[in-house]
Amino acid sequence: MRGTSECGLSWRRLVLYASIFLQFVLGLSNDTKSSSTGAKAEPHASSSKTGTKVALVVIGIVTVVLFSFFLYKLWQKKKRDEQYARLLKLFEEDDELEVELGLRD
Image (cartoon, rainbow, N blue to C red; front, side, top):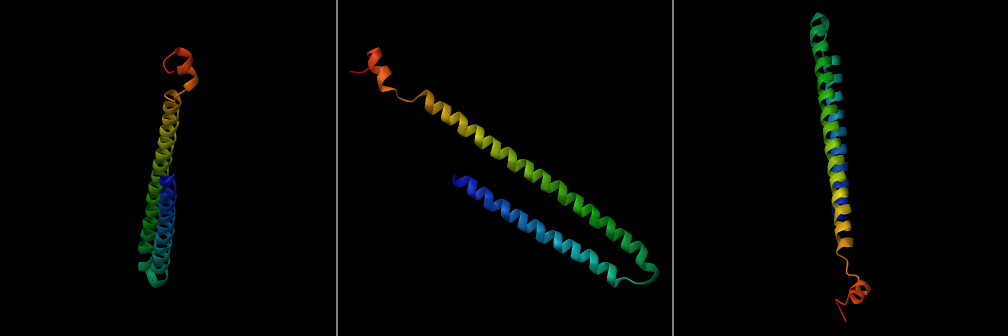
């Protein structure tokens, strides 16, 4: 169960870093709009909006991929634990059965 708590901790860190990064990106996009003036502001503002949208889409895709990877690893661990439990149950010593078969006195 140690791995589960470590995964939870790393997941929390990932969410924290992602939220900080999003705040940083959104803060930068707002600063460029307020500092630009005149006719030059139009092309720069639209490219800044496009850049921000692209960055958010990339962050969203990366987040979905990481979340999918986390769920896949969790599923693998669950399946491995189930198989290990089945293996232990299969090779569990049953004293009564061994006595009945005459394998043990």
